[in-house]
Image 1 (cartoon, helix red, strand yellow):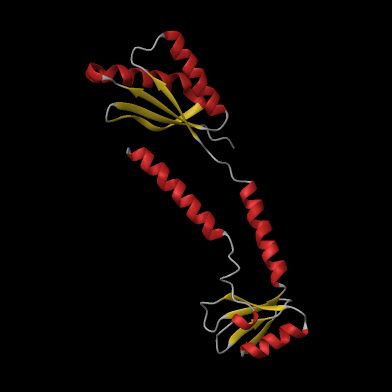
Image 2 (cartoon, helix red, strand yellow; image 1 turned 90 degrees about the vertical axis):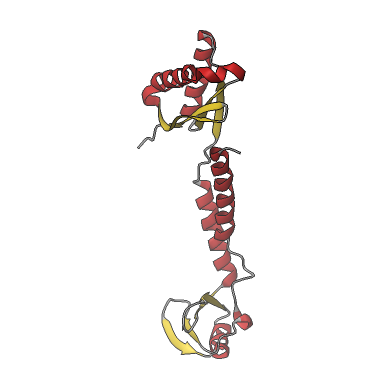
Length: 195
C-alpha cells in the first residue's frame, strides 16, 4: 500500500469519524429526570440566569412553562441546564447540520495513466482529460507504470510528467511533484483556487 493511498484511506476514515461526532445523538443529552447532579446552574428559556438550584426545583420550573430541562454543559461545575423545548432544539440542530452538509464539496481524485512510449495523439487525448477533470474541480493523479526493462528509463517518464505539468500551466497547480513509488511514477495535480 502506497503512502498516498494510506493518506486517502485515513482521510476518508477521519471524515466519517468527524461527521459521526458532529451528529447530535439525543441518547447522550440528559434531559428532565435523567439529570443526576446534586445541583445545577439554570438558564431560563429567554436566556436569563436563574442561579444554582437542585434538579427537581429546576424541573418543576420547566414543567410550569411546559418545556424541558436540558443539560447543555455537563462538564461544568455545577452542570449548566437550560429550560427549552427539547424537540425544537433537536430539529434546529439537525437543520444546521443539513445546511452545513449542503455547502460541502467532495473532491475526488481521478487517475490518468501514461506509458513511457506514449504516442503524440494519445498524450494530447489524455492531457485533455486532465484539463477537463481540473475544470470540474477534481484532483488528478497522473501515473506512469514501468514494466521490466523500462525501469532503467525512469527519466523518460519524468520528462512526460514534466511536459504535462508545463502544458497544464495556469489551469492547475502541482500538489505533489513527480516521484517514484515502486515501479510507478506519479504526480498529483489540483485545480487552481479561484476567489
